[in-house]
Amino acid sequence: MVEESGIVLSVSEGFAEVETVRTSSCTACQAKSACGHHAIAKVSSSNRMRMMVQDSFASEVGQEVVVGIPEDTLLKASIWMYFVPLVGLILGAVIPSVFDAHSSVSAVGSILGLGAGLYFARQASLKHVNDPDFQPKILSLKAKPFQNIDVVQL
Image 1 (cartoon, rainbow, N blue to C red):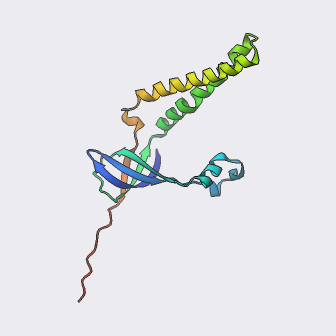
Image 2 (spheres, one colour):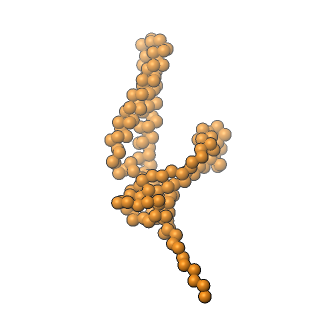
Image 3 (cartoon, rainbow, N blue to C red):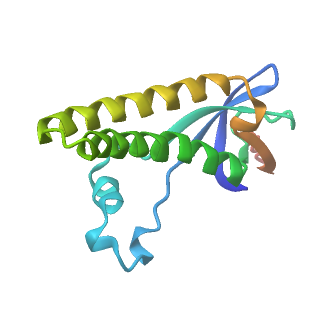
C-alpha cells in the first residue's frame, strides 16, 4: 500500500477532501544531480495536493489521516499511462522502417503511434473512473482535530 499523510479539509457523504504535502526524498538520493524529478521539485512552488478520498472512518475536519492506494493499482495505472504510449511510439517508428519507408514516414508513424497509445490509455482510464480500487482511501486516523480550550483565570 502506498501511503501519505494529510489533513481533512471537508467531509461529505462517505468522502473527504484531504490535502497532502508532497515530500521528496531527493536529499538522501545519490542520483539527485542527474535527476529530472529533483530539478522539478526545486522549481515547483506548490507542493500541496488536494484529493477526494473514500472515508469509511467518519473523519472530522482538521483531523490528520493516512491516505493510501494499493501498489498493484498504481502499477497498473503506470503501465497504461507510460508503457502503452511508449510502445505505440516505438512501433509507429519501427513498422515503417521494416518496409524501407523514408525516415519522414517513420517520424509521422511515431507521432501517430504515440497518439494511438495515448488514446488507448485514455480509454482504459475511463473504464476505471468509478472503480473503487483506483480511488484513494483513508487507511487510518492519526489524531483528533484541535479543539479550542477555554482558559479560566482564578
